[in-house]
Length: 119
Image 1 (tube, rainbow, N blue to C red):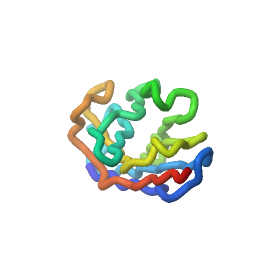
Image 2 (cartoon, one colour):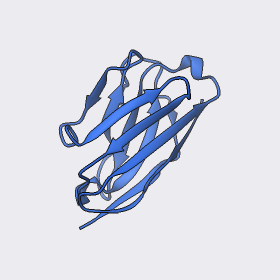
Image 3 (tube, rainbow, N blue to C red):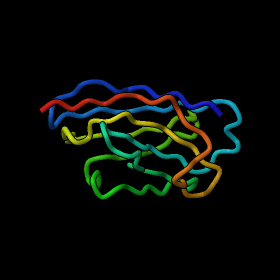
């Protein structure tokens, strides 16, 4: 499975970005997908996940601001990020899992896309 993210960049406080993650290869093995992030000096954390059935779940820090969704016909995962804050600055990683709900150590990872929010 190969995952390729796009859509990161520099945005001002309060702005929006949409991240995309295109999956290819043995995608039949994929069930849950998610977005992780790792900020400067911080540990990697799960931001949002979506089950194989399409049920989303979010970290408390992004609830109401971020939306995760997937287009199975296009084999693509998205993360719509609104009302961005400087503390959202991080490298964002797409991940895919064989489990129904994404785990903390999914087997498949993208290379990451950087999001920088300026104050």
